[in-house]
View 1 (tube, rainbow, N blue to C red):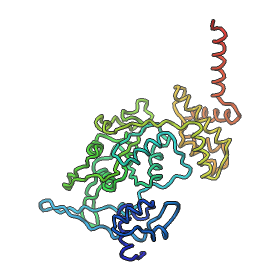
View 2 (view 1 turned 45 degrees about the vertical axis):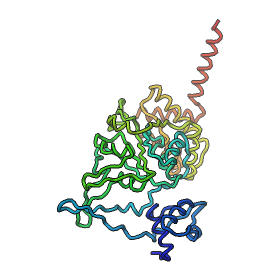
View 3 (view 1 turned 180 degrees about the vertical axis):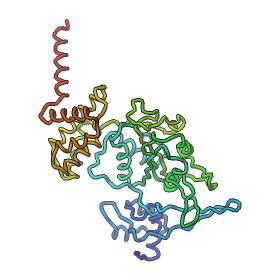
View 4 (view 1 turned 30 degrees about the horizontal axis):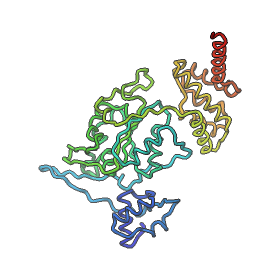
Length: 384
């Protein structure tokens, strides 16, 4: 354990309480922690713990002792409200190497930067970077994020908290929603449309007013900076084509509490190539031609999918899987085959056949455009 002078310890304790042990602080956060602790600006800290431009890392060894347990009495029963070990964790998402900001990145970042409570619902097909985008916004802003993966079994006990056996005693442990509210960070409800009507316990939370924990007779008011974001493959109306089995029709009153709905498509070919080349650099297997072919291949398959010609598509995530497999096996054909083997035989064979044509320099999109131009030329010739 690192020891500090009393004044320095005040600053360390204040910073840990505000941002979490091991967190990376900005200059402004150092100023804020100094003010809260009632000490001069901690220049010594910035000098000793600098890890980059405008980045200063709190030492892990300086974590303060856990806060004392508060008690709430109800007749003859005493309930201890205990804080989870998250109080000493750094909940700022780690930077994702090779991440490319695109699409609605700026929109969601503006919402987060405003500090206003403004719930957002992000929907789109699987593997197009919805969750990663939200995580990287918070990583870029050095802001904490609590991600909760929703399932059909998720209920009030999972979200708001419940009684647990702790060191032989039954105590109430706050859930992730309460943690996010009390820390003033963002709550991410991932795969939200897999939930049931049990999510209705979040109604007051989605209004930004706070929530009443009836199990312990306590009202929790969110701190400034708290917000809720949700990701889903549907708009909460179920999956008519059955592609996203398990998704449910969410209550209209629940959906109505999200201020905006953002539809996230797949990235454009130019952006997707940047993403794929970034993945190649990360895995140490850069091949620009291979990246071009993969992006064109995925683009053709998606166009065919949207036109109703095929029931499956290639996501950006699957392209990343292929690049990683290529880095491991050093064989393009094997990498692609392994990563499309999850599809049925006919789809798999058609995808492999399509890639072989593209790799040979045959681009179906170019042929289609050529045919379209010819049709227009013929039409013009006989249009009197």
